[in-house]
Length: 102
Image (tube, rainbow, N blue to C red):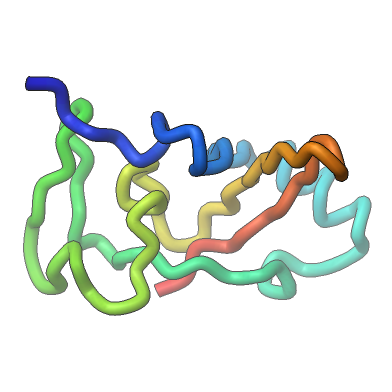
């Protein structure tokens, strides 16, 4: 049986963790600090990604209120910046950025 992945669904936009050099360019372009980016909630050191399987470690449950499931699937850590690419018939391609917080 094949495991369902959120990122494989056609309604979920492309999410990717940005590299430090990409983040610097982004912040310089908009002349802002990292903390001024819109936020997305992650889990602090309670989830470890093992291959394609996400397992619960200690403390919080994966289903904690407000935690974004895509952040868990990506394996993003607190402080990472996620680039979201949305495709629209009217606007074409739109980029959004989110800072992973606790």
